[in-house]
Length: 359
Image (cartoon, rainbow, N blue to C red; front, side):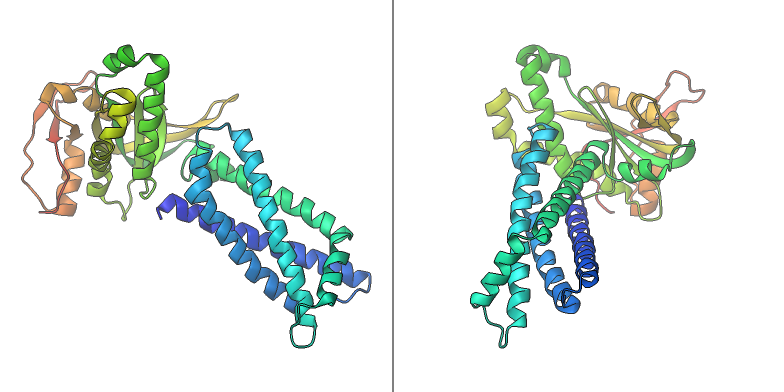
């Protein structure tokens, strides 16, 4: 299970448990006010246990099957269908809670006729109706939040809600820009629709690679994707750049699929730079996070010049220095000194053509 899936599971289980506690406390307070007996400890214990199990099952189905099934469906369609399916499961588990609580009240824990009478009374009561409405709202809200979080990217939704980048702020970041090689040739051969479908497949496979890392997808620009990592004490520069080589390996393992469907195996090139950038929330009608600074521009230029040096990925001297500090190797030699427009001094760059190993 990758990092993104673990976060989904944690969110769904936590959300369901909090919702269960709320509805149980609500029913207890209402029934207590009406003078109806309500064994809070038993209901709470059984309710939370069943909620944990049902939430775990729902989370498993979400990450293992449903997310893939609805990947190419509209957001609204996926939201409505999955909400209906989850609500059906929750009603079943909720019924199980009612019957178990009733059975516990019987001497010797019996699932007898009295249990079914109690359950029937519950089904035709206001508690069943309000419970369905409550859980329907919870299911819809949880899936909506997950869907919106996917649209924004890892960690971005939380930053928007907290207003972290409402005012511009500086951050030290590593950028890795990946671009499809020979994109014009691919587009002419496949046509616009088939070409776009290939790009969708490429970026879907890339997501599988980066979902277990701290990478954020900054943006997709045509057939280019910009990945970024915040520089901190935990960052592993080798692992960040190896995302590119892991992706290349995945594309080789899926060569039969791409050859059969598109008649070719897409190949990417990449450029990487690090440094201080400004991060700000921009836009009025459509808001998004924007990074401004030399590192992003430099990474883009390095990516574009990979073919000049027959290189899969070009990195700056800044990136190579950090790699040397962390991994202790010195077998990489400068590939070239590039004079980039707008820069006073030439930029020393390094070519990397295979997985980065420790020395």
